[in-house]
View (cartoon, helix red, strand yellow):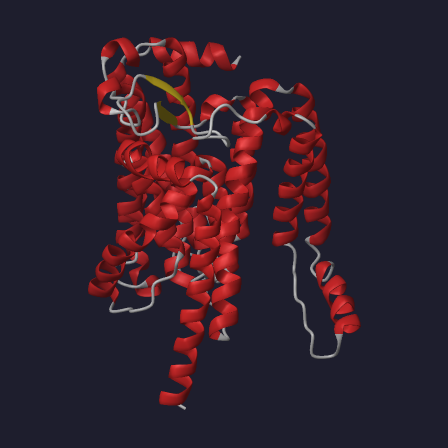
Length: 428
Protein backbone atom coordinates (compact mmCIF):
# COMPACT_ATOMS: atom_id res chain seq x y z
CA UNK A 1 0.00 0.00 0.00
CA UNK A 2 2.76 2.42 0.96
CA UNK A 3 4.64 1.64 -2.24
CA UNK A 4 1.53 2.33 -4.32
CA UNK A 5 1.05 5.72 -2.64
CA UNK A 6 4.71 6.56 -3.19
CA UNK A 7 4.59 5.57 -6.87
CA UNK A 8 1.43 7.66 -7.35
CA UNK A 9 3.13 10.61 -5.65
CA UNK A 10 6.01 10.45 -8.12
CA UNK A 11 3.61 10.48 -11.08
CA UNK A 12 2.42 13.96 -10.07
CA UNK A 13 4.13 16.97 -11.56
CA UNK A 14 6.67 18.72 -9.33
CA UNK A 15 4.58 21.90 -9.23
CA UNK A 16 1.54 19.95 -8.06
CA UNK A 17 3.60 18.17 -5.40
CA UNK A 18 4.92 21.50 -4.13
CA UNK A 19 1.41 22.96 -4.05
CA UNK A 20 0.15 19.99 -2.02
CA UNK A 21 3.11 20.29 0.32
CA UNK A 22 2.40 24.02 0.80
CA UNK A 23 -1.17 23.15 1.82
CA UNK A 24 0.22 20.47 4.12
CA UNK A 25 2.57 23.10 5.55
CA UNK A 26 -0.37 25.39 6.30
CA UNK A 27 -2.21 22.56 8.04
CA UNK A 28 0.95 21.64 9.94
CA UNK A 29 1.29 25.25 11.03
CA UNK A 30 -2.30 25.22 12.26
CA UNK A 31 -1.55 22.03 14.20
CA UNK A 32 1.63 23.57 15.65
CA UNK A 33 -0.31 26.65 16.76
CA UNK A 34 -2.94 24.49 18.42
CA UNK A 35 -0.21 22.58 20.26
CA UNK A 36 1.55 25.79 21.32
CA UNK A 37 -1.53 27.20 23.02
CA UNK A 38 -3.20 24.05 24.35
CA UNK A 39 -0.46 21.52 25.18
CA UNK A 40 1.52 23.99 27.27
CA UNK A 41 1.44 24.05 31.07
CA UNK A 42 -0.71 27.20 31.18
CA UNK A 43 -3.13 26.75 28.29
CA UNK A 44 -4.50 29.88 26.63
CA UNK A 45 -7.85 29.97 24.75
CA UNK A 46 -6.31 31.32 21.55
CA UNK A 47 -6.37 28.35 19.19
CA UNK A 48 -9.51 28.31 17.02
CA UNK A 49 -9.71 24.55 17.60
CA UNK A 50 -9.85 24.93 21.39
CA UNK A 51 -12.66 26.19 23.61
CA UNK A 52 -12.78 29.99 23.44
CA UNK A 53 -12.55 32.30 26.41
CA UNK A 54 -15.91 32.88 28.15
CA UNK A 55 -15.58 36.58 27.29
CA UNK A 56 -14.93 35.91 23.60
CA UNK A 57 -17.65 36.01 20.95
CA UNK A 58 -18.78 32.71 19.50
CA UNK A 59 -16.28 31.15 17.13
CA UNK A 60 -17.15 31.11 13.43
CA UNK A 61 -16.39 28.55 10.73
CA UNK A 62 -13.96 30.94 9.04
CA UNK A 63 -11.89 31.07 12.25
CA UNK A 64 -10.75 27.51 11.66
CA UNK A 65 -9.37 28.08 8.16
CA UNK A 66 -5.56 28.12 8.35
CA UNK A 67 -4.00 31.55 7.88
CA UNK A 68 -7.30 33.27 6.99
CA UNK A 69 -8.87 32.48 10.35
CA UNK A 70 -6.32 34.53 12.32
CA UNK A 71 -7.36 37.72 10.57
CA UNK A 72 -10.93 36.99 11.66
CA UNK A 73 -9.76 36.26 15.24
CA UNK A 74 -8.25 39.72 15.56
CA UNK A 75 -11.56 40.65 17.15
CA UNK A 76 -10.29 38.92 20.32
CA UNK A 77 -7.31 41.28 20.62
CA UNK A 78 -8.66 42.84 23.82
CA UNK A 79 -8.53 39.42 25.50
CA UNK A 80 -5.17 38.11 24.22
CA UNK A 81 -3.18 41.23 23.34
CA UNK A 82 -3.11 43.54 20.36
CA UNK A 83 -0.75 41.54 18.16
CA UNK A 84 -1.44 38.02 19.46
CA UNK A 85 -2.42 36.81 15.98
CA UNK A 86 0.81 37.86 14.24
CA UNK A 87 3.00 35.00 15.50
CA UNK A 88 0.49 32.25 14.56
CA UNK A 89 0.18 33.74 11.08
CA UNK A 90 3.94 33.79 10.64
CA UNK A 91 4.24 30.19 11.86
CA UNK A 92 1.68 28.97 9.32
CA UNK A 93 3.23 30.98 6.48
CA UNK A 94 6.69 29.82 7.53
CA UNK A 95 5.79 26.13 7.45
CA UNK A 96 3.88 26.56 4.17
CA UNK A 97 7.16 27.80 2.69
CA UNK A 98 9.61 25.64 4.66
CA UNK A 99 8.13 22.21 3.92
CA UNK A 100 8.09 22.58 0.10
CA UNK A 101 11.57 24.18 0.30
CA UNK A 102 12.80 21.25 2.37
CA UNK A 103 11.34 18.86 -0.22
CA UNK A 104 13.23 20.57 -3.05
CA UNK A 105 16.42 20.68 -0.98
CA UNK A 106 16.41 17.02 0.03
CA UNK A 107 14.72 15.18 -2.84
CA UNK A 108 15.28 17.32 -5.95
CA UNK A 109 18.56 19.20 -5.58
CA UNK A 110 20.41 16.65 -3.45
CA UNK A 111 21.18 19.22 -0.76
CA UNK A 112 22.28 16.52 1.69
CA UNK A 113 24.87 15.12 -0.72
CA UNK A 114 28.41 16.26 -1.36
CA UNK A 115 28.49 18.87 -4.13
CA UNK A 116 30.33 16.51 -6.48
CA UNK A 117 27.44 14.03 -6.23
CA UNK A 118 24.64 16.50 -6.99
CA UNK A 119 24.44 15.40 -10.59
CA UNK A 120 21.48 13.92 -12.53
CA UNK A 121 22.93 10.41 -12.83
CA UNK A 122 23.24 10.19 -9.03
CA UNK A 123 20.00 11.97 -8.13
CA UNK A 124 18.01 9.68 -10.45
CA UNK A 125 19.17 6.47 -8.78
CA UNK A 126 16.01 4.62 -7.57
CA UNK A 127 17.27 3.79 -4.08
CA UNK A 128 18.35 7.41 -3.54
CA UNK A 129 14.92 8.69 -4.60
CA UNK A 130 13.23 6.34 -2.11
CA UNK A 131 15.74 7.20 0.60
CA UNK A 132 15.41 10.93 -0.03
CA UNK A 133 11.64 10.85 0.40
CA UNK A 134 11.90 8.82 3.62
CA UNK A 135 14.44 11.27 5.00
CA UNK A 136 12.22 14.19 3.99
CA UNK A 137 9.20 12.65 5.74
CA UNK A 138 11.11 12.29 8.98
CA UNK A 139 12.58 15.79 8.77
CA UNK A 140 9.22 17.38 7.97
CA UNK A 141 7.62 15.78 11.03
CA UNK A 142 10.61 16.76 13.17
CA UNK A 143 10.39 20.35 11.91
CA UNK A 144 6.76 20.70 12.98
CA UNK A 145 7.49 19.19 16.39
CA UNK A 146 10.49 21.47 16.92
CA UNK A 147 8.45 24.54 15.98
CA UNK A 148 5.82 23.66 18.59
CA UNK A 149 8.45 22.85 21.23
CA UNK A 150 10.41 26.02 20.51
CA UNK A 151 7.56 28.44 21.00
CA UNK A 152 6.21 26.69 24.09
CA UNK A 153 9.74 26.90 25.50
CA UNK A 154 9.87 30.60 24.63
CA UNK A 155 6.56 31.18 26.42
CA UNK A 156 7.00 28.99 29.51
CA UNK A 157 10.57 27.64 29.63
CA UNK A 158 9.11 24.11 29.44
CA UNK A 159 8.83 21.45 26.75
CA UNK A 160 5.83 19.12 27.17
CA UNK A 161 6.30 15.36 27.07
CA UNK A 162 3.21 15.29 24.86
CA UNK A 163 5.47 16.55 22.06
CA UNK A 164 8.69 14.64 22.66
CA UNK A 165 7.25 11.22 23.56
CA UNK A 166 5.09 10.72 20.44
CA UNK A 167 7.85 12.30 18.35
CA UNK A 168 10.44 9.85 19.66
CA UNK A 169 8.12 6.89 19.13
CA UNK A 170 7.50 7.99 15.53
CA UNK A 171 11.25 8.30 14.91
CA UNK A 172 11.84 4.78 16.26
CA UNK A 173 9.02 3.46 14.07
CA UNK A 174 10.45 5.19 11.01
CA UNK A 175 13.89 3.76 11.77
CA UNK A 176 12.52 0.24 12.13
CA UNK A 177 10.83 0.37 8.72
CA UNK A 178 14.20 0.67 7.01
CA UNK A 179 17.66 2.01 7.72
CA UNK A 180 17.42 4.19 4.60
CA UNK A 181 15.64 6.75 6.77
CA UNK A 182 19.02 8.21 7.77
CA UNK A 183 20.96 10.97 6.05
CA UNK A 184 23.72 10.13 3.54
CA UNK A 185 27.44 10.06 4.32
CA UNK A 186 30.01 10.49 1.59
CA UNK A 187 32.92 8.06 1.36
CA UNK A 188 35.83 7.99 1.78
CA UNK A 189 35.80 9.97 5.03
CA UNK A 190 37.70 13.20 4.54
CA UNK A 191 38.35 12.60 0.84
CA UNK A 192 36.64 13.40 -2.48
CA UNK A 193 33.19 11.77 -2.49
CA UNK A 194 32.96 8.69 -4.68
CA UNK A 195 30.15 6.71 -2.98
CA UNK A 196 27.39 7.01 -0.41
CA UNK A 197 26.34 5.23 2.73
CA UNK A 198 24.07 6.10 5.65
CA UNK A 199 24.57 7.88 8.97
CA UNK A 200 23.65 4.78 10.93
CA UNK A 201 25.02 3.92 14.36
CA UNK A 202 28.38 2.53 13.22
CA UNK A 203 29.43 5.49 11.03
CA UNK A 204 32.19 6.44 10.41
CA UNK A 205 33.82 3.22 11.62
CA UNK A 206 32.81 0.75 8.90
CA UNK A 207 32.11 -2.13 8.78
CA UNK A 208 29.86 -2.46 11.81
CA UNK A 209 30.91 -4.90 14.48
CA UNK A 210 28.94 -8.12 14.25
CA UNK A 211 28.20 -8.21 17.99
CA UNK A 212 25.42 -5.65 17.56
CA UNK A 213 23.44 -8.27 15.64
CA UNK A 214 23.72 -10.71 18.53
CA UNK A 215 22.17 -10.73 22.00
CA UNK A 216 24.60 -7.93 22.92
CA UNK A 217 22.84 -5.61 20.50
CA UNK A 218 19.41 -6.65 21.72
CA UNK A 219 20.31 -6.12 25.37
CA UNK A 220 21.84 -2.74 24.52
CA UNK A 221 18.70 -1.68 22.68
CA UNK A 222 16.47 -2.81 25.53
CA UNK A 223 18.70 -0.98 28.02
CA UNK A 224 18.48 2.26 26.02
CA UNK A 225 14.71 1.93 25.80
CA UNK A 226 14.42 1.21 29.53
CA UNK A 227 16.67 4.17 30.34
CA UNK A 228 14.48 6.50 28.26
CA UNK A 229 11.31 5.27 29.96
CA UNK A 230 12.98 5.62 33.36
CA UNK A 231 13.98 9.19 32.47
CA UNK A 232 10.31 10.03 31.84
CA UNK A 233 9.27 8.82 35.30
CA UNK A 234 9.12 11.01 38.40
CA UNK A 235 12.60 10.53 39.88
CA UNK A 236 13.63 12.24 43.09
CA UNK A 237 16.45 11.03 45.31
CA UNK A 238 16.21 12.87 48.64
CA UNK A 239 19.06 11.90 50.97
CA UNK A 240 18.31 14.21 53.91
CA UNK A 241 16.70 11.39 55.95
CA UNK A 242 19.14 8.63 55.08
CA UNK A 243 19.65 6.21 52.22
CA UNK A 244 16.85 3.81 53.22
CA UNK A 245 14.28 6.61 53.30
CA UNK A 246 15.66 7.98 50.07
CA UNK A 247 15.00 4.67 48.31
CA UNK A 248 11.52 4.52 49.85
CA UNK A 249 10.68 8.05 48.68
CA UNK A 250 12.22 7.32 45.29
CA UNK A 251 10.06 4.25 44.68
CA UNK A 252 6.96 6.05 45.96
CA UNK A 253 7.65 8.91 43.57
CA UNK A 254 7.74 6.58 40.57
CA UNK A 255 4.07 5.72 41.07
CA UNK A 256 2.92 9.03 42.53
CA UNK A 257 1.43 10.34 39.31
CA UNK A 258 -1.41 8.45 37.66
CA UNK A 259 0.49 8.45 34.36
CA UNK A 260 2.86 5.77 35.69
CA UNK A 261 0.55 3.03 34.42
CA UNK A 262 0.65 4.49 30.91
CA UNK A 263 4.43 4.78 31.10
CA UNK A 264 4.68 1.18 32.31
CA UNK A 265 2.52 0.05 29.38
CA UNK A 266 4.74 2.00 26.94
CA UNK A 267 7.85 0.39 28.44
CA UNK A 268 6.49 -3.17 28.18
CA UNK A 269 5.14 -2.62 24.66
CA UNK A 270 8.51 -1.19 23.64
CA UNK A 271 10.41 -4.17 25.02
CA UNK A 272 8.20 -6.50 22.99
CA UNK A 273 8.42 -4.39 19.82
CA UNK A 274 12.21 -4.09 20.00
CA UNK A 275 12.54 -7.84 20.48
CA UNK A 276 10.31 -8.49 17.44
CA UNK A 277 12.32 -6.13 15.24
CA UNK A 278 15.53 -7.78 16.45
CA UNK A 279 14.17 -11.14 15.29
CA UNK A 280 13.34 -9.62 11.89
CA UNK A 281 16.96 -8.47 11.66
CA UNK A 282 18.47 -6.94 8.55
CA UNK A 283 17.61 -3.37 7.65
CA UNK A 284 14.80 -3.25 10.23
CA UNK A 285 17.09 -3.91 13.20
CA UNK A 286 19.86 -1.78 11.69
CA UNK A 287 17.53 1.22 11.44
CA UNK A 288 15.88 0.77 14.82
CA UNK A 289 19.16 0.26 16.64
CA UNK A 290 20.57 3.36 14.92
CA UNK A 291 17.58 5.39 16.11
CA UNK A 292 17.97 4.02 19.64
CA UNK A 293 21.66 4.93 19.69
CA UNK A 294 20.76 8.42 18.45
CA UNK A 295 18.21 8.68 21.27
CA UNK A 296 20.79 7.59 23.84
CA UNK A 297 23.56 9.92 22.68
CA UNK A 298 21.32 12.93 22.07
CA UNK A 299 19.53 12.67 25.40
CA UNK A 300 22.56 11.37 27.28
CA UNK A 301 24.79 14.32 26.38
CA UNK A 302 22.25 16.87 27.63
CA UNK A 303 21.41 14.78 30.70
CA UNK A 304 25.09 14.55 31.64
CA UNK A 305 25.54 18.29 31.22
CA UNK A 306 22.39 18.93 33.26
CA UNK A 307 23.59 16.75 36.14
CA UNK A 308 27.10 18.19 36.23
CA UNK A 309 26.06 21.82 35.74
CA UNK A 310 23.27 21.57 38.32
CA UNK A 311 25.62 20.00 40.88
CA UNK A 312 28.33 22.59 40.25
CA UNK A 313 25.98 25.58 40.37
CA UNK A 314 23.80 24.35 43.23
CA UNK A 315 20.65 24.98 41.19
CA UNK A 316 18.85 23.50 38.19
CA UNK A 317 20.90 24.36 35.12
CA UNK A 318 18.32 23.36 32.50
CA UNK A 319 14.94 21.69 32.36
CA UNK A 320 14.52 17.99 31.75
CA UNK A 321 12.45 18.83 28.69
CA UNK A 322 15.73 19.71 26.97
CA UNK A 323 16.91 16.15 27.61
CA UNK A 324 13.81 14.55 26.07
CA UNK A 325 13.88 17.05 23.19
CA UNK A 326 17.46 16.16 22.29
CA UNK A 327 16.67 12.45 22.65
CA UNK A 328 13.89 12.93 20.08
CA UNK A 329 16.21 14.84 17.74
CA UNK A 330 18.83 12.08 18.07
CA UNK A 331 16.25 9.40 17.27
CA UNK A 332 15.26 11.25 14.08
CA UNK A 333 18.69 12.35 12.86
CA UNK A 334 21.13 9.84 14.38
CA UNK A 335 23.79 10.30 17.01
CA UNK A 336 26.23 12.05 14.66
CA UNK A 337 23.76 14.84 13.86
CA UNK A 338 22.71 15.10 17.52
CA UNK A 339 26.31 15.76 18.60
CA UNK A 340 26.87 18.22 15.75
CA UNK A 341 23.61 20.03 16.60
CA UNK A 342 24.73 20.42 20.19
CA UNK A 343 28.02 22.04 19.11
CA UNK A 344 26.22 24.34 16.65
CA UNK A 345 23.54 25.41 19.14
CA UNK A 346 25.67 28.15 20.80
CA UNK A 347 26.15 29.85 17.43
CA UNK A 348 22.40 29.78 16.85
CA UNK A 349 21.91 31.07 20.40
CA UNK A 350 23.71 34.31 19.60
CA UNK A 351 21.20 35.17 16.89
CA UNK A 352 18.20 33.97 18.92
CA UNK A 353 19.16 35.94 22.05
CA UNK A 354 19.69 39.18 20.13
CA UNK A 355 16.52 38.74 18.06
CA UNK A 356 14.33 37.94 21.07
CA UNK A 357 15.74 40.79 23.14
CA UNK A 358 15.04 43.30 20.35
CA UNK A 359 11.43 42.13 20.11
CA UNK A 360 10.51 41.37 23.73
CA UNK A 361 13.31 42.90 25.88
CA UNK A 362 13.44 39.51 27.59
CA UNK A 363 17.07 38.56 28.41
CA UNK A 364 16.25 34.97 29.43
CA UNK A 365 16.12 32.47 26.59
CA UNK A 366 15.49 28.76 27.20
CA UNK A 367 17.90 26.15 25.88
CA UNK A 368 15.37 24.23 23.75
CA UNK A 369 15.26 26.75 20.86
CA UNK A 370 19.07 26.63 20.66
CA UNK A 371 18.99 22.85 20.25
CA UNK A 372 16.26 23.02 17.61
CA UNK A 373 18.14 25.69 15.69
CA UNK A 374 21.34 23.64 15.94
CA UNK A 375 19.50 20.61 14.53
CA UNK A 376 18.13 22.71 11.66
CA UNK A 377 21.60 24.10 10.87
CA UNK A 378 23.02 20.57 10.90
CA UNK A 379 20.49 19.41 8.30
CA UNK A 380 20.83 22.51 6.10
CA UNK A 381 24.63 22.37 6.13
CA UNK A 382 24.85 18.56 6.27
CA UNK A 383 27.66 18.08 3.78
CA UNK A 384 29.85 20.84 5.20
CA UNK A 385 29.07 20.05 8.84
CA UNK A 386 29.21 16.27 8.69
CA UNK A 387 31.28 15.19 5.71
CA UNK A 388 33.85 17.98 5.79
CA UNK A 389 34.17 18.73 9.53
CA UNK A 390 32.63 16.36 12.07
CA UNK A 391 33.30 12.90 10.64
CA UNK A 392 36.90 13.51 9.48
CA UNK A 393 37.80 14.77 12.97
CA UNK A 394 35.88 11.98 14.63
CA UNK A 395 37.52 9.39 12.42
CA UNK A 396 40.95 10.85 13.21
CA UNK A 397 40.41 10.96 17.00
CA UNK A 398 38.83 7.50 17.21
CA UNK A 399 38.20 6.21 20.73
CA UNK A 400 40.07 9.19 22.17
CA UNK A 401 36.96 11.28 21.54
CA UNK A 402 35.21 9.63 24.50
CA UNK A 403 37.97 10.61 26.92
CA UNK A 404 38.07 14.09 25.47
CA UNK A 405 34.32 14.52 26.04
CA UNK A 406 34.61 13.27 29.62
CA UNK A 407 37.46 15.69 30.24
CA UNK A 408 35.41 18.57 28.82
CA UNK A 409 32.47 17.68 31.07
CA UNK A 410 34.77 17.63 34.08
CA UNK A 411 36.32 20.96 33.11
CA UNK A 412 32.87 22.49 32.63
CA UNK A 413 31.81 21.31 36.10
CA UNK A 414 34.97 22.71 37.68
CA UNK A 415 34.54 26.09 35.97
CA UNK A 416 30.89 26.37 37.01
CA UNK A 417 31.78 25.41 40.58
CA UNK A 418 34.48 28.09 40.72
CA UNK A 419 32.05 30.64 39.27
CA UNK A 420 29.48 29.66 41.90
CA UNK A 421 32.04 30.29 44.67
CA UNK A 422 32.97 33.66 43.19
CA UNK A 423 29.33 34.75 42.99
CA UNK A 424 28.65 33.68 46.55
CA UNK A 425 31.56 35.73 47.86
CA UNK A 426 30.97 38.79 45.69
CA UNK A 427 27.19 38.98 46.03
CA UNK A 428 26.58 37.41 49.45
